[in-house]
Image (cartoon, rainbow, N blue to C red; front, side):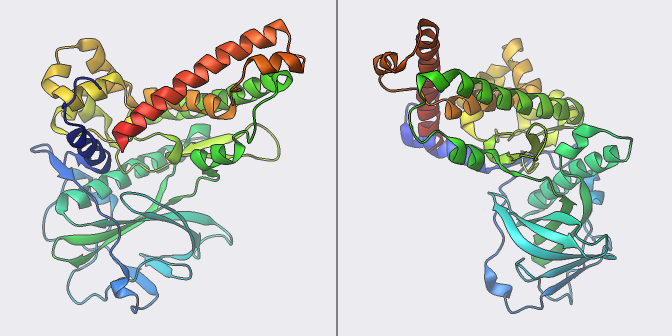
Length: 385
């Protein structure tokens, strides 16, 4: 962080810019940076509540990934309404009834829906992305391609890891104007709530008593271990095809079944890049993506000094090319433990509540860990803002 521009305002503006811009290679010939915007406002609210999609080819050629998303003719097609509860979306021969909004991100909205063409109660997720440039459209197509790869793997036997990732079911795009499209990605729905909201609820509301400290630590470590084990296995498989680049708390889902350990999933491949191209040097033509609070040293180096400096350091280059998602997952595990283990402010007062020598030593070490995490998080959040 010390190698960045000496001007704080420039650093903060650049950090926000880097976190909100997806840099994707649109073809094998040139890099394209896509700053994807949110959905248009309700200018089309009076439009019919039924959306129909066909998939004729576009006149303009696109990247090799274009087959992941279907397309609509531009002329003579009624404008699309914004998605909302009750809307029925028709894509090819499939129909989906939107039921509720699941979340809102930088690049689009995600909605819960029912598959009207399939078994009763079959729930899916529909991601709506507004693309205001060809590179942005190709970025959405690339996300569809990655989700299609997961769908393909789902049909190749009983693979538990595929249940932790959304798989593409259907897709379509519709032109809204000059080089403006709306893309819909229909995918399997991963159950659960976002991990950041889960931790907000589970955080201790008061100082953890010394006699409950070990139990709290064990519970938080078990939760972190389950997440690393489950998502680590998923990343081991998916990393052959894609680098997620944004696998933090807000994109990790947790579901607590009545029996068995919590189940984790990873969503939102909006910042993902092709793994093979990335590891062959494609990162040198792309801006940094994701939440800078989860960046490794290599990401900060390239942000502050550029790709040419990172190339000179083989170990850090290997980290940036191969370890972005693993680094984020590891920091998230530490965050789980720090958030769930509230270190007492007055360590000495705990000795008067029956704490033995072992508990006091554990308390000191845990307090030091929590303090270190708070300092790191506060500093990195300042850069993020």
